Length: 200
Image 1 (cartoon, rainbow, N blue to C red):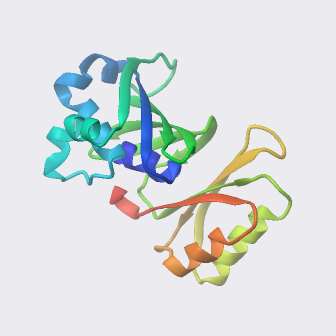
Image 2: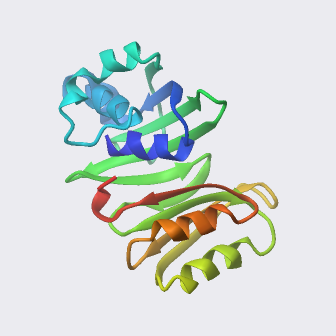
């Protein structure tokens, strides 16, 4: 559920189409274990404890969500890995690779073909942006000015000048006012806050 929710948040608009690749044991057991229902429930925005999860496939069809599952081979990936490729109703597109690593915990390892390491164990900002000079300073400076300490930072980009992703772990939750300030920075494409302990 959490993997689906994070992917939908990264897309940033209602999902029209979802193509879901399942790796390892997920590909073998997803129907029996309800992995398909959980992923679709997350894409619909349900919380992990939502009673509607068991009916999510039917609810998704009624909502007009086109979804499909297929086996995927990813050498070296965690055995419980899913790759979600989503298209939004207004034209947005994203691809998110995530794994269920036990105990309700997740690991988001790729976003739009860029390597990440988002666990949800600490408050985290996922910042999708244009790779332009001064972007890191603009974002981290505003976070520092808000009084929030950065505990960990990672930047990934396919090549210079393209779309890039920052993942910023913070020592405290980020105030909504700071999120609005960051979204106003030229070149920011999308900001997704992930609360600590996978409470998204």
